[in-house]
Length: 129
Image (tube, rainbow, N blue to C red; front, side, top):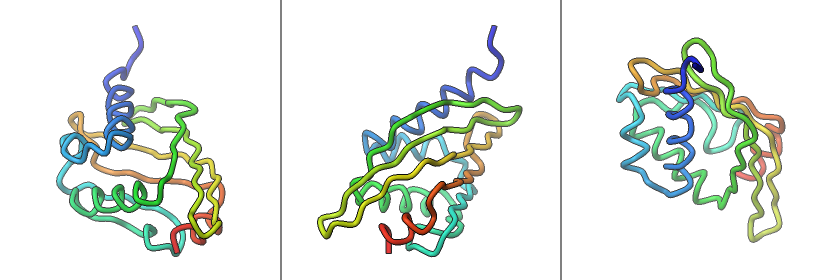
């Protein structure tokens, strides 16, 4: 039997809540003290602290019409990593095409930390300026 299948489920539910814009569903997955780090200097960069800030960041990304493709789910000892590809096109012609790893660290079945690693930080900075 595969170990940490619950972690995979949390990762899948995280992406499903994002895709459906189900903010209550997303909140149910988050520890209230969750922190999300994202590199760069864009308005979505830095550390979002607390469930409200994480949801606000997620809404900001969704408002950018970002399409997220799941490439792989990788399971670790204390969480799950989502290997993703994000693409988007802004009305003014700016585009986004990046690969990323979003690491969801879990405690008691809830997400207590999110760390995102990007393939194109300058491109993300430009898109979310």
